Length: 157
Image (cartoon, rainbow, N blue to C red):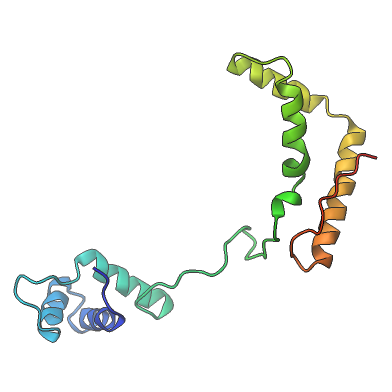
């Protein structure tokens, strides 16, 4: 059952007024809202959760965060179509897949070996081109204020 904000607020207030007693809070709740003796009242877990939320954010109902944490260093804006920015997404996986499955590995050790060999044999000049392309993508993302990239940039030279 979804409890109203008024009911939640009363339960938190009753919890503090009744010496942090869950049973006394439930009795006060039953009296205040005219609930029959066998009628439903908030359970222990709900009351404890509402009190914890009240202590943490000053509200009985926890608010959903509007942003997602993508860094341990704090909230960062996540650019639109970010897979287009990450070299592993726009280059590495497709490139490796084309090499790794060339000889159709049948066992997991064979597949792992193919992956190791393909990564070890990526030419340095190719990695430098990928890095230059990555910088271009980042610049374009900044110029577009984080909106979608106008086109996908694949430069091989």
